[in-house]
Image (cartoon, rainbow, N blue to C red):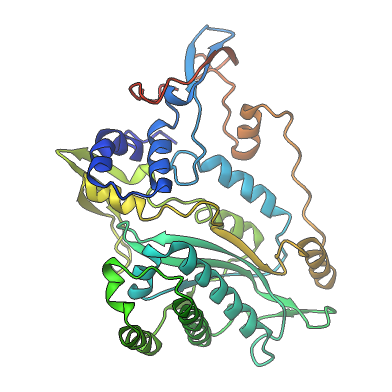
Length: 401
């Protein structure tokens, strides 16, 4: 795949300093993300020089920032995550269920990320496990993982969870596999109603404990009457929970889920151009009928940066979480039990990489080689020099690797 000619890093490098000057209230996490993206794969982070042992072609390889919000640093992390998940797949149908929240909850989450995102995970997990355990629906213990996304196609704040779930679970006594009906997991209307109730009950508890910051767009909710009226409206609103078409099998799960797990708010290949203080990028309008044609949105550079930074997560907040049969404490034993009652064996473990050299790791996980010379295609690129990082105050150099 060709490298995009324009990157989010280019927008930050050109307009980031001015944005910092105009927005002194940026959080330390947002400032760290901006710096990481600006310096990723530049001289500011150091690197090394490689030379072909056949034709003497040289190239500079600068170090990556490894920040989870950086569009350039997700491919290897995604491949490594998928490699670990391969051993956890069960030979059964899989489902993809998405939990969304109304706009007012998104406004609350923008100012209370750690609290509200935590409630979103807990309410979703509790809803799925409760309905699945009900004998009127499935009557089984299920396992799943949930991935937090906080953006819409135009970078607006739209928190939602993508849940990937095997189509069944263990019976209460653990002696058999209880499969759901083919092509149908759980009733989404039932899920939606319980999800709404569990989330709002927990939100009320957070309000009573004074753990919510009510300012900006939600400042009017500070008084108890206004808060009570808002929650009454939310209890009457339909919360959207929907199930996508089920996967055909485990192989399709990995291929599909890889698009979701390590995605960032906007990938570099969606950028079109930037000029005269404006940034243009493509987006998909899901209200359009199929087949959809990508559209182009134009934003002022400052608004583009503001929207991108809306999706910076609080430090230490896990955006992928595991529940039920996939919970970390009993995952190995539970999966072994599932395979025993399904009559299947565990997938073969991935072969270990031949060495700890990052080039071997990249090739083992992505199939892309960094060893072969890109010019003569015969020689091997060998490291011949180390580049020390340039102090942050120095100009940021572009990536030449």
